[in-house]
Image 1 (spheres, rainbow, N blue to C red):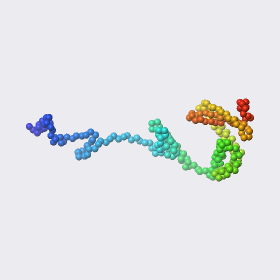
Image 2: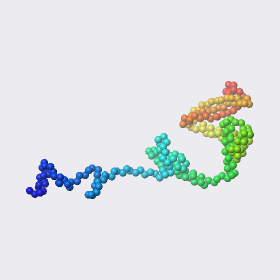
Image 3: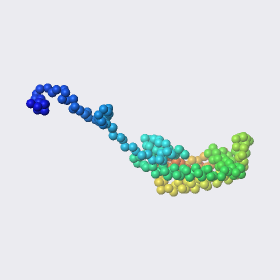
Image 4: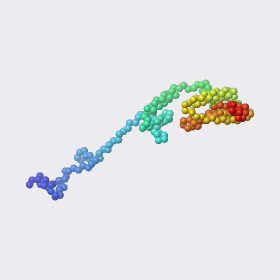
Amino acid sequence: MSNSESCTQDLGSNQPIDDNILEDIEIEEPGLEREEEGEEIVPSASKKRKQVVRSAIWQKFDKVFEDSIQKGKCKLCGETIAADPKHNGTSAMWKHHASCLKKNEAKKNQTPFSQDELRQDIQERGRYALCRMIVLDEQPFRLVEREGFRLFCRDKVPNFNIPSRYTVRSDCVKMFLEERELVKVVFSRPSMSRVSITTDCWTGVNNTSFICVTSHFIDKEWSLHKKIINFFDITSHEGMTLLRC
C-alpha cells in the first residue's frame, strides 16, 4: 500500500489523527487579520465615525445654551443669535456678523466730538435728565435755584450750566408734549383692546384741587402698564363737579 493510500485510510478511520498531519493547518480567529506569514495578528480596524463639518462662522461666535436651546454669542458685541441645529441654520449668524463688522468700522471712522460739540451734548443730556428728576420726584422748578443743588452740580458736573427755573419749566412742558404723542401711539395699536380708567383727586399746598385720570392695561406679554392720560385742576371734590369733568 502506498503512502497516499495509507494517509487516506488513516483519515477516514476512527483512529486518532496524528499531530504531525495538522501541523500545516491554519486556524483563523474571527475579527483578526493576518497579512503575511511571520507578522503579528492585529485586530481589524473599526469603522470610522462620519465627521461633521462645522461652519466657519463659529470662529466668530461662542456656543452658549439658554433654556436648553443652543445659541451663538457674538465675540464682538456679545449678542446671542439662535443657532439650534435642528431648527436654525447659520444664516442669521452670518448676517449679524456682517452687520457687526459694519458697525465697528463706522465707530473707527467716527470723528470725535470737538470741545464745543461735547459741551453742547453734556448740556442737552443734563437738561433732559434734570427734567426727568423734577417730574419723577415731584420737585418744584425752584429746585435749580437752591444753594445745595447748585453746589452739588458744580462739584460733580462742572461743565453743566445750570438752567433757570423758567427754562426748566419750558423743558418740562416740551417733554410732556412729546410723551403725550407717544401715549397716542400706544393706544392706537391694534392689540390695545381693553383699558381700565381710574381717577385720583387731591388738594395741593396752595389749596388748589386737582384730578388725575390714569389708564391701566396689560400687553401681550402680560405686563401691567399705566399711563396718565389727563391731569387738570378742579374747583372742588364734589360729585357734580367731578361729573362735569
